[in-house]
Image (cartoon, rainbow, N blue to C red; front, side):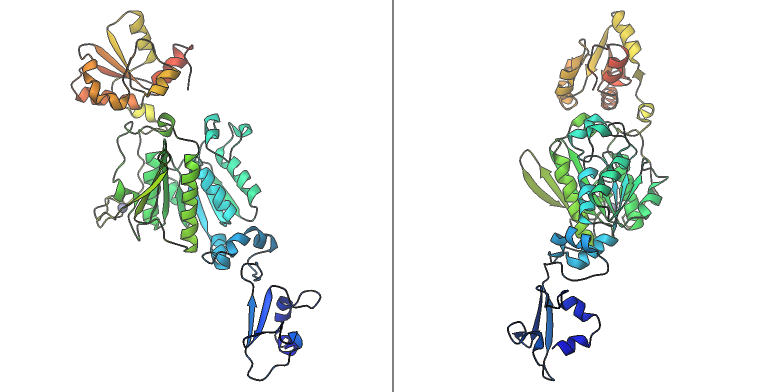
Length: 442
Ligand SMILES: [Zn+2]
């Protein structure tokens, strides 16, 4: 037996330990007999004996030039999964994943991708850490407030796993740079919180033939899907175009349970890892709906739309588009076309006892934080049932927090025939800043 091993140059080091003993995690069979129980390595062999060398699979014993000792230990729980194993871990190491948005979703998604050993992770975000982020964005600490999100996240992920490469893209994704940035990655994890970037990411993924691991959160509800136009629908197959600016509140206005993005971002990381390793069934053609209040997961089938404007048979969108006029996108205030009133104008009108109706369309919790005493309070979703409370014979000024939702409501009232409607520029935020500093700002 020993003589046979000696005929193969590199074999002995794998079979014997430094004392020359057969390694504990290696079993050698001659025919169906374990050599340990049948003569050991001194056992004589016959011409037609068949030798089987069987290493222990879950013990991380298979040597590979692609992983060093630290990596074998670090990823040992992956090596023991048949669906991942050495080969899957190697695929993870070779993969490049771009996480768009380092908010509530991008934080847990990038943390798990880094821990899992994805070899190259890109992070895109133009913003700095804000105190209000700490409720859900788990990579950041109090000392990071005011610092660029991507550089803090890069440091944090590198301290978790120095075996991988992290690239920080500190810029806002736009039609000008998105194609170039996405080109370097195999899979895109969409953790954006605004429609322009979501559509931009979707369209470029379709153009570049890349899977787009989508997640979104609102209040207590989450959605996850994998859009891959080669095999299934894209985001535009589901929602061909964005809703009008202002009709959908941003997370800042609508609120979000802090733990919720932890669940949804982790689900996105799972889908990215499955996609890279080929494990399991991808979430393609299915939309997963998570309701944290009811604590339920549901899924609905979604199918490819042959008339989809970007992945359909005759696409009308063939290059990236910048949508404007949305929350979280610069230039929002300027793109509102509704007649506007400044907070100073409103102050003058109130001082002169003008006949004016101030309509506050925010949510009840926002009213409790701060409100203008003279205002009539009707939250947006109660508006259609309470139009009778709004006097059409007087001048109406509509306000919300920053002027986005109220602009949509102003448009709506004008279309309903109210002759004299204006939107309060900058909302109650501007009012608190410029007119009444006794009001709490949020
Ligand atoms: Zn499509």
